Image (tube, rainbow, N blue to C red; front, side):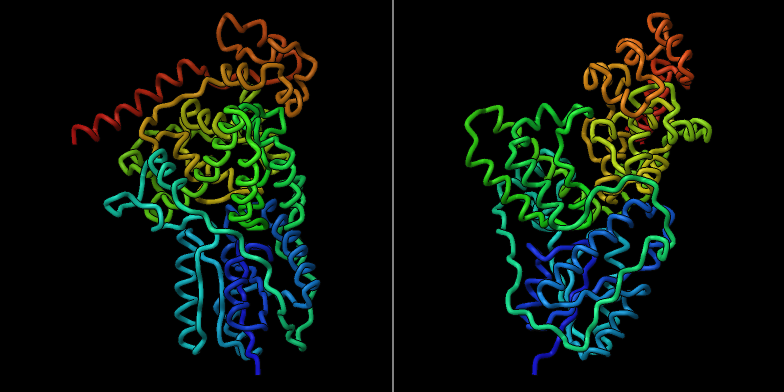
Length: 478
């Protein structure tokens, strides 16, 4: 008689290229998939309604996919250990499979679940599925983890990449199981006003094909920097929730590589692969140095003096800083749950180095809004922007006016998200207006009801440098 096993879905909401599903099917032909809405996660202050809305749609698509295979996706709300123990006892399951995570909370939860299930006589099997190369697989010759991206990238790209896992065949249903409608967003205690992109495997596959088969990937090195263009893949929420497998994504780049006929196209492909590598690098950093979740990678910079003015932070959150490119980006985030990566760097630099506000404030706000909010990537990006992370050349300060002129030269992006300025000539959009040269632009924007700049960039960058170098000096003298 076949004994069923449980497959605990978390951030792997797909059938294709799923390592845990593959291993569970090798163990038993009766695989019972389950998703558990963990109350500890739902009740976190930084759980974004946009992510929960995306999650629910992804689960609906996954439920449909399992139904087509003749299987039933179960779901519960509660403590994962309690729910898994109950399901295992009810179904007579002797094993639970899942894909591992690198976040500190997930690792602690999984350790507790593993111990609790073992006490109940239930076997646990977990493996690496989220990354092409998990923590411990990309190491220096001395066997140490990398703390700098460039050597990590050189080693990472040299390693062989595994092919995607196929969807298992000949899985058998458990006759007594019946699918239940998933809870609504309101049932889980959330309201989402943002426009959420389509979720699920089919949506992810369509995006991947459009980006790679449509060859937009071959213009990526240029187009990725212009927020008014559709130059990025938009796969980030799908990678965050695992509605597409990372091996499948890599395989798509291999297919593109075979068709490349120019150095420019090759450079664009490698640049996008580097972005995949950045995602993995930050997960490795979080796994090896978990203190970065709440502290600077370079701990001395926890002593950096911030002003943390609540009024300026609120203006930044609302897109009312008087810097059009900053405000356009923040309004895009608030309206859509997503922000262009170039703009993420601009607004993060502005918050930390112009407004002198602790990077953790911005990191938390992003997690409260982003549909693709991921602890490792978000944390790594914010620490990079604040100059407190792994970056060996950390003191970069973005000038909002320069960034706008270079990457939104016609003001298309600004006009899209700051509609009160849409009727102005482009120079009036791009000049900051905090000096005599830009005073006429300031007057034109005032007439549109747009706020004056809340700080002077030149003054603030000097003050940030002073505070930053004071910490650097104390480090060297110590």
